[in-house]
Length: 193
Image (cartoon, rainbow, N blue to C red; front, top):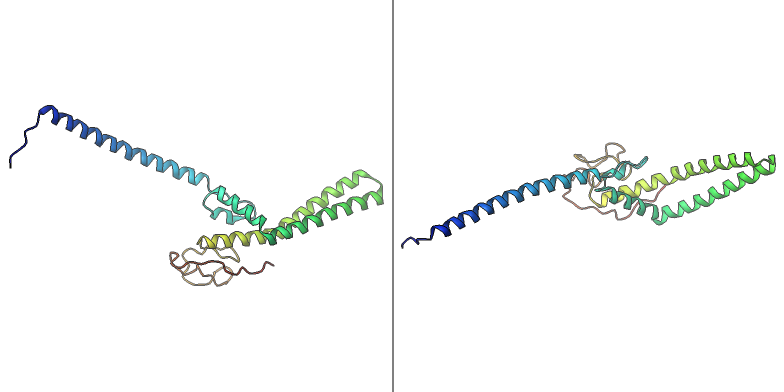
């Protein structure tokens, strides 16, 4: 077998093409690292922040996902029904307060103040009545997504070696399961209350 003698211009072109290819690969690697770093910054900046009373929202992948899950929790039929009942009670309480003050005192100013205070109080009652149910729904959704969290109290169960939540003592299927070797679906949610 003999050596193939090539034209020096061809060898020069092949060498130049090889060098260009290697530089292009190096630039592509640098761009990939920059894009990955930018994507990580965007992901971190778009993570959900804890809404007051709903720390579970931080555990979702993005702020958009957290808002969507919160919206779905509010639209969950039992929660929606309770919200409707509380809304009707709020309107009735405001009307009774307004009418009672006007009939007793004859003053529209006192009626406005009483109505506003009753509205604020009833809003607070609505929030306090619905918050535990929404939290429970969000925790169940996190468990469906295999996030280690206690459905009852919201305790972070990462790294647990026992099958019980150390905070509330509830048996948890994700505690002690290691790095999520078994799947878990919330098959029968416990009644709210």
